[in-house]
Amino acid sequence: MLTASRSAPRSHLTCLSGERLDLHNFRGRPVLVKFHRFSGCPVARHQIDQFIARLPELTGAGVEMIIVLHSSADKVAPNFAERSGLHIVADRDKTLYRAWACTFDRRRLLSPASWRATLAALRHGYLPQPTRFQGGVVGIPADFLIDGAGLIAEAHYGRHFGDSWTVDDVLARLSTGTLQRGS
Image 1: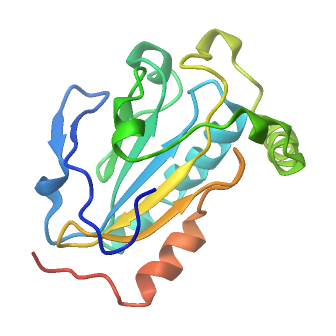
Image 2: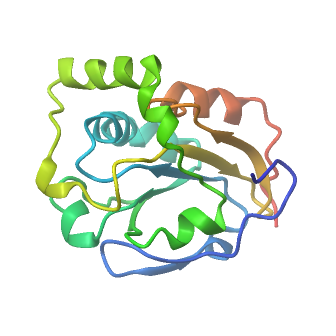
């Protein structure tokens, strides 16, 4: 597991738009890196859409956001579109998941909390999209807040597939002022 105060893994990312990014491009700004399951997962879609809906608050706080899903770009693109401050990365082969120590545990599929998160997503109209299941159904979210110097300020590895930071969680972490904004 990656921990606070460590350098974020050097990651070369290709976004849905085809743009190539490197985390070093964002020096001086906080970056939120969120790992979710496949693009057909109702829980992942529900959680990501909450971030997209509140993107102006995050960009207003100076945050760049990178969301990684373990699906191919053709499976991700129908569900999500990039916007200024939001970068979506399709990582079907889970290369980034391994680099960021995002592990998968089948036992967590049986967690009652996972099923509660699924039911909540279903209640909000997020149905499973079986044609977009890719990269396996086993996945646990992970969240990383990277400071302006490229260090991990905070890391969160989910205990089940609904355990991911909310927008309020991120904004609260930003408001503490502990992130370095310089290079």
